Image: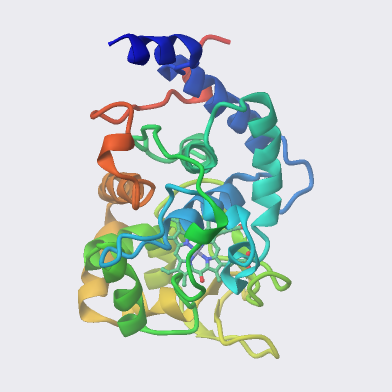
Length: 295
Ligand code: ZEM
């Protein structure tokens, strides 16, 4: 009736084109990283999107990407989120330019742009997350602990509603980026091309010989040959657990298969905790890469 239409008239309803503009702005920032890490903000943006989504608990239906509660203390100070201030501050610039977008939509769209612009598969995405309040923040301990084994991975990811195949598919994100001494305590990249999405994480897991790194830091593996790559205990376990290994091998042998499964799992990950009724479209969108658009 009248109330509804009056409301619609006074509110800006962004279209897919408006979200594409945000995507494009994020893509500019991803590429314009100067000397930061390996020359891209893509990996740290993907990590922000993942940590804002991976707090989901299906039993209590709390956590997930809906409210972007990592903006608030103490969640912003949780050990697992160390270093993500870099990504949040970067996205703050985009928020200034497009104040109508919610933080949850902004951060997950940044994850999508990061994957797509670094050469990964298309990640179906749709907007609808709303900004929450500090009391909706999740307790510490919901994100995985890299020092643990297969039981822990299952406990954490089953809680989000994922199965073994999806755990392995999602873990392939470690093709990207690196660990930082002053963030997690771990050190180094997983692959030789940390700003390109490839299935090299899986290939290297099986092709290289992994030995414990001899150092004062937390227990991590290094490749015996070059000593320049790393694996976390939770990464290496993907080659040890029978069920994980089956999927990891399949992804090592077939990048297309991994792209397909990774896309599906990430798309779901980014929607955890968002009520279906909040989404503006029932069919998720495929955002265009920068190089697919007219210059
Ligand atoms: Zn990560 N991850 N992750 N991850 N992750 C790190 C870095 C990155 C685990 C983990 O403890 C760590 C997923 C799953 C899991 C990325 C994406 C995704 C780091 C290093 C650690 C310790 C942080 C640092 O020092 O900066 C564990 C235990 C996981 C369980 C399977 C999933 C799922 C991801 C996305 C879908 C990315 C992109 C990075 C690199 C960040 C950067 O700054 O370069």
